Image (cartoon, rainbow over all chains, first blue to last red):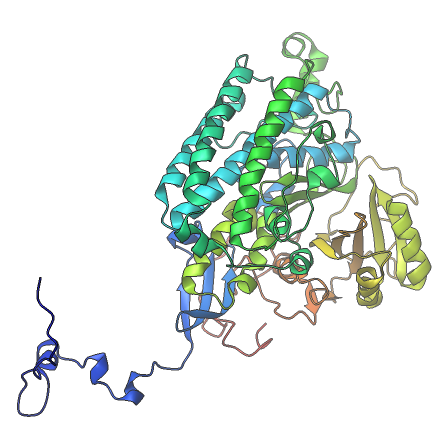
Length: 431
Length: 196
């Protein structure tokens, strides 16, 4: 170790013109060599592009930041880089063909989108409340599993963006177990297209109950570990607490729903306030935060994961036996043996597939509690097999519209946790 | 629940209403365009209404609306609301869906908009959530929201020609992106409302 000298160091050797050795070697002045005027930073505001290809921008959104030094003065959030014309394509697809498109809206929780679309068409056809009990329970089971994958991804990815890589790996492992189970149920890992108008496409696999129960037990263990790593982690709390806070009044007026609104103290959950499916038969709590900042959003999501596990365990106990599809020839395909052996069923099958389900003229708006809040579909039907207009009320789009307000006055580094906790899903936001 | 809201609306703003209907339990009120802002303000502020939470805003293009399986008559959808004197139905309907977080009721406001004059008063100053929703509606349908604080395209780029969700925009249509330097790159630096 070099001993520290108490005397001032000798002046650096220089040349005759007074330039220091450092200047001679480096070719420029050092900060302390500058006069006071020169040391001041330029007072102009600077424009910085964040995204659309930025690791923390979750794929595809661009924020044009106007910064004063490191502080954000204004931000213009520009979505649309993932716009795939969901609404235009839906107008040209039969009602059943829209299901694969809804898979690609919120691709972290596709089952909930499936259920939402099925519910709006059922509302138009007057089938709400006539869906077989077992099918409703299966819908709730797959929806809650999807909600878990949504929250696991959101928390895991946000923690990773703040430097905590282990929770990300743990949660993605848990998410993969759920995806594997959903793959066994539907045949596809990510884009399930499992729900149909009037029910679901097929029954659960035979050993599903035991596998889901085992999976939930393992996830409970993982959540204990991840909460231990994050909840009182100083770095995590410093980055999350007090960042991107929103008042209750703001959350309501800006249309926020789901975990973001609940973190701000808005007690609104579609499953409780406008109960649908078999949620009235299930017992669960709606967590509500107080501060409305990123840390409360994290805590609300963690608590919702626990409530999902609670709902799923009740469903496994309560699920009855029964058919998976409503017995209504308008929406249900004829049984396969009848299709192959009778001409009437053959024709009905053909018309069903080629012309689509005939939905009577009218309009309806149906909504479910998605991973990010109220996910709704507004459909105008004209009596044909294809929707005249299909509109999706995507919570991500509404939440992203508050981002400019949330990041105002924060540092550029704070955009990352704020954006992570908004949990913008590009497919859903950009439609 | 929905009937109560419609009755109160009829009592308070009877002259501003073209018609009221209820479909599948959803309350729908057709409002005259000139009265939309006044009715919306009342819906937000009246304690018995308290529609504090906006849900969505969009538009319907009725260009090739030919409903099938509906017997002709007064019940033909849409109702007679919004028909102009010459019998031609206005092409567009702007739709606002509202929710009350205290009373839990919901209401859909509709406003008929003719093609030659696609203007609607903006509700973005009443409910901030409609800022982006109206931008989306403008982007997709070309509806001009008057007094909107920042009306520009949101999903598509400024150079895009046409409004893709209109029924006369072909689904297969492609158009090249021709860069135009006269359009604002960073709207923050331009003066407010100075563009489009």
